[in-house]
Amino acid sequence: MRIAVLVLAAAGLISASTMYTVDGLGSLNGTESVAYAVNDSGEAAGWATAGVDPQALAFSTGSSPTNLTSAAHGTDATASGINKAGWIAGTAYAGGTSYGVVWTPDGVINLGAGTYAAAVNNAGQVAGNGATAFLYSNGSQTNIGALAGGSWSVAEALNQSGEVAGYGNTASGIEAFVWAAGAMTELGTFGGADSYAFAVNDAGEVVGNAATASGYLNAFAWSNGAMRDLGTLGGSQSYAYGLNDSGVAVGYSWLAGNTDMHAWVLLNGVMTDLNSLIPAGSGWELTAAYGINNEGEIVGSGIFDGRQEAFLLDPLTSGLSSVSSIAGVPEPASWGLMAIALLALFACRQHRRKV
Image 1: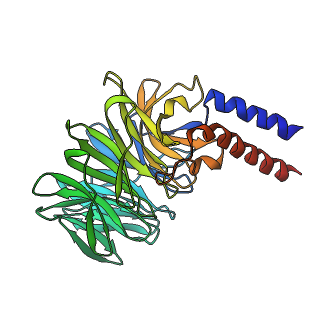
Image 2: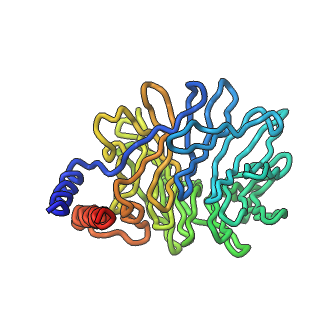
Image 3: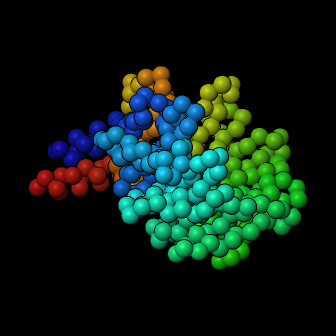
């Protein structure tokens, strides 16, 4: 009887579209904050704006964020990647010079002057940037190089196999790429001049932003050699920044009228406003989503109590980590039934734990 009630409650939950809880991750002394990456344990990395100097932060739900910036490693810093061991990749600045760094429990790895660190994987490899993008591994750097006709490249993301995604200049514009096995693959555009890649998962799928013929940027998903336009939330432009190994993408988009931006997640192949999936009356306006882990948890930034703050969304069932693959999308009519089935399975598991 209890299971039947829970399934009926799940059906009501779907109709109300509440699929995530939302937690504020805090900041430093009332400053604004953003969370940019999250590992599978729900630990996140990002930064706070402290006056004019950003401060790199490590976030953990239920506790105050940890300031990673110190005078020994620069006066300001940002953090943009985190692995399962809690290693955090970012960039510190000292005397106007950038230093790519990785904060670890045993100390700070410094990649050298004039570098930037974008991401770190579970093997401790780092996607970084100097004159061109590079892969740092076991104390040495492998230069990724530039695209044909170009002179520079930027790494933004890294998967567990050491594949790197980013963008670089060409003779005709800026183009997204993925680098694997020593070779760079250009991902293309939607008819415009430029494209940018910001995430790559372990299947080699990539998301980012690409220009249309009109010059506007739209979020894209690239899989098996094909680029797909993910659309917008009604505005002129959208951006994809996060992707997990199940192919679930997140980002942000302008709304109709182009006066406000909202965070989104791809559900059933459709870009869905995350503000429609959190409890009504939460007090949050989610403006941007930047990272998603393999548990389906999402991090980004939003407005709460009149101030920008980093957030973490926790799915009400773990099934939401894989309901929306960019490579294979279920039929629209099956989404409601799938969600109810996932919640019913979750309810059954909870029941068995109590028996």
